[in-house]
Amino acid sequence: MEAVKLKANDLQVKAVNEYKSLKMCPSKAVDVQVCLNWIIMPVEQKSKFADWKYNQNVMKDSYTLKKKLLDAIHDINDKPEQFKERFEKVEEIFNKNKDNSGFTFEGMKNVSLAAGCLLN
Image (tube, rainbow, N blue to C red; front, side, top):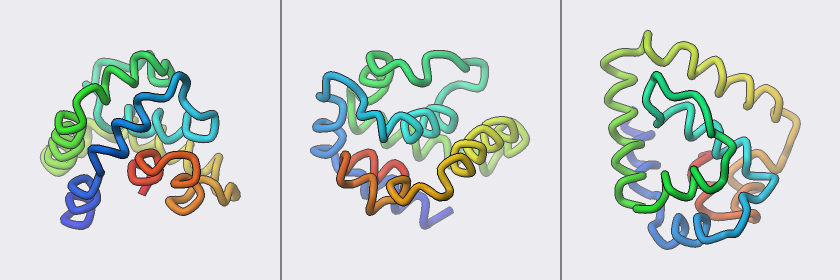
């Protein structure tokens, strides 16, 4: 989990600001955004995951986004059973993209550095 915390802390504010300023989510990054939402959204919330305006609001404050990521890590450690469905959904997305070389940090950073960091 320490490695995950380091990755969350490495998320660059400038990159998040660039990413959220896009008029539309890059089509290649939609699955990254959906995975992020499965991890950080409240357990009872399951809609709007692919809605770009909603996601821009989630990323409105880059520091709050980092805090949500770090809080999610803590929650996963404390209550892993609550994240079972979420991990299954994220795993489905990764399995769908397993042969997609663009669904890696290196491939995604060409679309958006923030999307690459979020995927990483």
